[in-house]
Image (cartoon, rainbow, N blue to C red; front, side, top):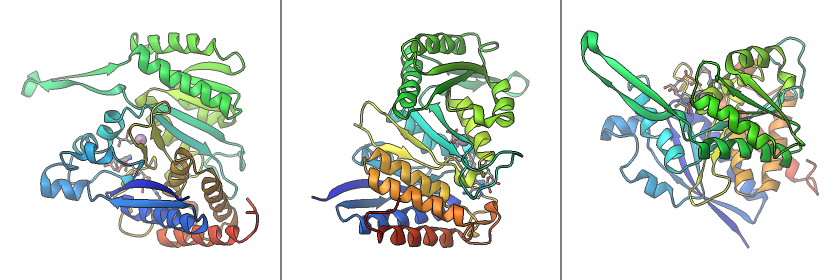
Length: 365
Ligand code: NAD
Ligand code: IPM
Ligand code: MN
């Protein structure tokens, strides 16, 4: 029996279109290798060009349309011609928030064949997962700007609910336990942010008491930024609010090969009524867009996370091994990793490796 997964593909802006093409190439190859595995891809041209034509980032009933898919695969959003808050609040954030995809999962791993920006760190020595609260916190969108000229006033509120904190922190501990990880580090700024983050710290203590087998640690964001760079080996699972985990996920990417290797997944682990949402951590990178310079591996690693979510563990494992082999061979790689290959050449190389791995029976992965 064929397992058919319906995927909404939103390539988006800038390098988003370039890297998603490579991810789709890999997924199509996997469906040739695993005969029971099938994808139905439906493409949506939503994004900044669409905005310039229609005055909105996606069609008015966009969420209703997306609701019918199993997963959404998005490249990136953002265009220098349009204010970023307009583009992101018009497409990416309404999907995560509207579908209540409260878990943001961003694995951080120093692959063999990739050099860290840090001295004295070698392959495989950084292995952590940033778990981001995706639906509230600093991104709650509560506030406004009033007044004019000297009288202008902006109010921006953070929203921290017991339910929202409890569910993301519980997920972090359950994830640690399921994956055999040893420690959860919660990161806040409760010395200055007296309400939301004090509540967060208190709930972390409550939840941690239910997981005596997992070590718990609480850090302040400023000290944590310093320490993640000084001692990345000391981190395992990190859980943090929407904004802090956003910042941390670029920081942790920078010590494991950069934005070209940082994948992301957003989903609701308790309820699959709405599709999971999969996009690399990076943005549309206007500085390199259209030049074939973008590293597609973040998007391909993101496709791997999508396969995990869809329950396709064999295909996910094969893809993961193909990516690892591409990196450890150090031959076909983009400029950000010190290579000379173009975006599509890296995608083609992963496809080549997928095919060669699939010829070994059982798969040598
Ligand atoms: P960015 O992640 O797009 O780029 C930061 C730096 O990393 C740039 O120098 C870029 O060239 C490099 N880079 C990023 N991805 C790369 C890849 N795959 N391969 C090689 N190099 C890569 O961040 P930014 O410049 O702050 O943002 C650009 C636009 O993207 C903005 O409009 C921003 O709002 C938007 N953005 C969107 C998302 C998203 O859609 N998920 C995420 C972050 C930023
Ligand atoms: C990310 C991005 C987005 C976020 C922005 C572009 C709104 O930085 O996915 O990491 O912070 O959610
Ligand atoms: Mn970000």
